[in-house]
Image (cartoon, rainbow, N blue to C red; front, side):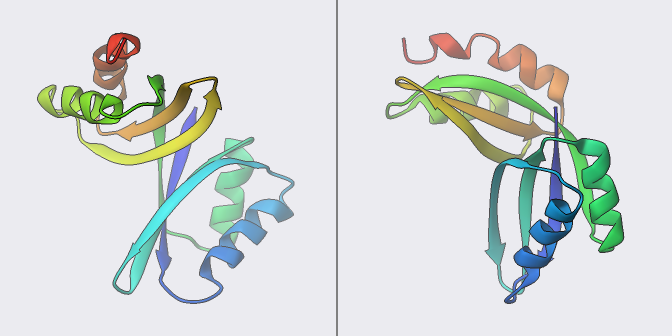
Length: 132
């Protein structure tokens, strides 16, 4: 699975233009997060169709990075995200984006977009024991 990290201007309509372009290709946005800082921002998007998303982003001349996602399940309780992110930091893995992708009972599925997906998978492979 991949995420698209899309650079955006921090002004009205920018996110609408992005999501409209993706929708026009018949693509569903499965998960999304984002933030702004000053005059710019970034959206992290996981869609149902990577190829069509690339086309949509190209159509609007968006600046973006496509990066592999590492999913893991965390207990929905204080400290589990802190422990997972500390494990990644200690392994030298930089987190580019974090996208919530779902909940199951008292667990939350999180997609990490990182500088080293293979190392992130290895590091997070024991994350189920983070708080249990």
